[in-house]
Image 1 (cartoon, rainbow, N blue to C red):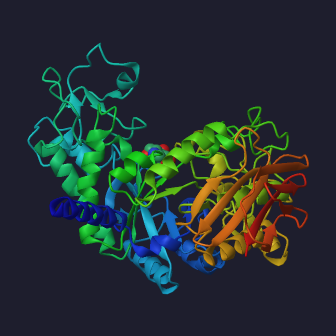
Image 2 (cartoon, helix red, strand yellow; image 1 turned 180 degrees about the vertical axis):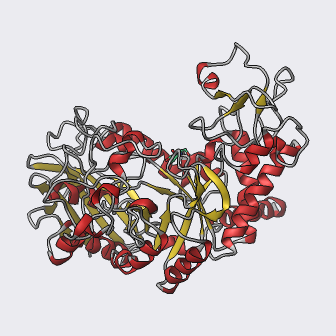
Length: 551
Ligand code: NOJ
């Protein structure tokens, strides 16, 4: 009996230790994602930079966010917007210097905020010195096995595998394996089950892959020691090849995260994995979940596919999203954080030709900023910047450029983004004369910007609405307008109802036996909550969202 008890206590201690592996600041973290080329140009060359970001920190803080994620800023050939790194230890001159970055970090910390960078763990630029050396005929040099080289291309490869073989005709070998574009050779973290007949498939613990992991740890250490608070890890699930169930990749990250947590207990690693069940098992603090299918499934942004949930037509469904969200949320509860970002640099913005009035965008923001886990606001989403279809393909952006147009600050030249001539601007800005700007919305108490600020203030004031508060759908998943969910922490309870449709709607559900409504915040004052003996009812006008706080 005593033995069993001891084992139980041990297991409990282990579980709670795992749950505590995240720094405390994540409990109230709200991130703001900045695409550095597009935020604020300080030196007048038409491209954003670090000093520009620094000059806007007061604004960022005024939103109520307390952490920043910067897309890649290391020296790059920009064949993929900075995700092709030439030197992982150097800030790209377009953005400034390492010293500028350290200065920015100081300013961020002075305001009590945190800042994370983007770590492209899975690949480098083909112009990286490591890659150049690995191309040389002598395969015994320091960087020779940092990449995956092969003389042959077997014909039994799956189509997906075959698409990764890039013909280089280097002295070293004919082909290398890429991770994304051809200009992004995959770093060699080994193969899950190396096949003896495939000599390029090294095991995860072979010297090459081990050296790459050491390099990754060096990069992390270099920047964390300069004061950076952590990284968002690009394509974190891509490291170990031929690993369909990701067990070898999870094991690798478990080791790296174990090392990281020990060395930098206040640091965070955020996975770009889109599967928190796996990434959090691998020791990550946060991973993203897509809400894309509730909004739009295409990058063109012109014609949203029929039956999107956040659409005035009100014909969408939440069931696919709900099933996967609930599963991910429940499976990672108390282990790590999920995040449903308002957008990012790879997907169309929530505001586009289909969804562009401020009421609709406020409804969407109410949804994002009342979910459990860690909110991420993509720059410009707080003012409803639009996805701009047919923007030119810049630096490998393809259709993603419409989501990366420069920030709209005010009504001055280039919306206050840059003093450069208009044709020099990184990506042309929204040409609409009535485009939203920070200056206009700042003055208007009813603006989307001020609504976002109010939402974040409310969120910060409450453990129930905060990152760790419980979440549960209370309305019928098959009757999605409105979607109603509860956020709770002990006795503190909030009900949130979301109606993106242009129809008046009601929801009825088994009574939650809540006390009186103490406080209401929403896009309109016309939503009502009626508690009944057996059934509670919410009534909502067209395109509305509401948060009820109960006594
Ligand atoms: C994901 C990044 O978010 C995306 O922008 C990039 O193109 C690929 N990874 C390749 O690094």
